[in-house]
Image 1 (cartoon, protein in one colour):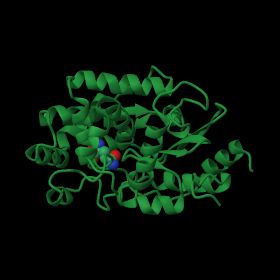
Image 2 (cartoon, rainbow, N blue to C red):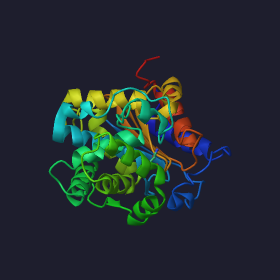
Image 3 (spheres, protein in one colour):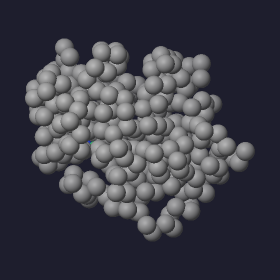
Image 4 (cartoon, helix red, strand yellow):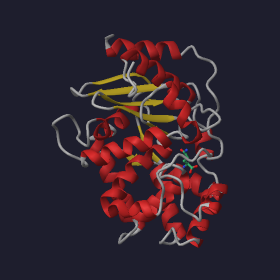
Length: 309
Ligand code: GLN
């Protein structure tokens, strides 16, 4: 087996020469300003090492990667009742698609497309004000990442709120079907703020440990969620974590992963590592071009694909 630190270093060095980097998300004005030439990677292993390269200490907007953490929290809050309001199937559609919602009566396909994540945010509001739900999200992220410095970038949240017409449409539509149970602006307020969490690759890789290590922060370490819950969330990451690019990601990388339009991807090699990569340029599905390439190379070199070989 090659040495992890040298694999990670080689990937960062090689990718710095790649010129085809996709395009930064432009529909959220604050994200459009992020320089495209950045790349970071952080890998935390079962024995507690954190190996980094490139811009691993630069904070970025985690966007849809936050959906993994809010799903964890909502399941903790209302349990399997959540699955009456959101499905578990890949959508095969764009992350902000409206068309599927109509013929499926306002029930989103899965918790990782925007509509599904807005339902998850709504579930988190059961018995709580938006401010309390956001406080719970921040506390959870800081706990799993073991880092009290993590914050929400208010400017990004505001930028998205001002231009989030599609998400507002999705939320109103679901409210009309009774799938959303709280005021639309409350659910959207939580959603826009969770997406605006600002984290580095190092912080994100640490935050993903409980998914890689059967619900614990390390093998045999403190428990965050039951092993079954971690396993199910990872299954959804594999099948739905990259929207209509999920099949392609499983084919190329073979790891459960969740992308965000800030250019980050959180991937897990079960039992072995939690990995965060970041590069702001996106492909046509909204997934990081260099991030996917880095994970493809890492999984291949370390033979970490969940499909073996
Ligand atoms: N906040 C973004 C949106 O709602 C999240 C999308 C994403 O990261 N794929 O459009």
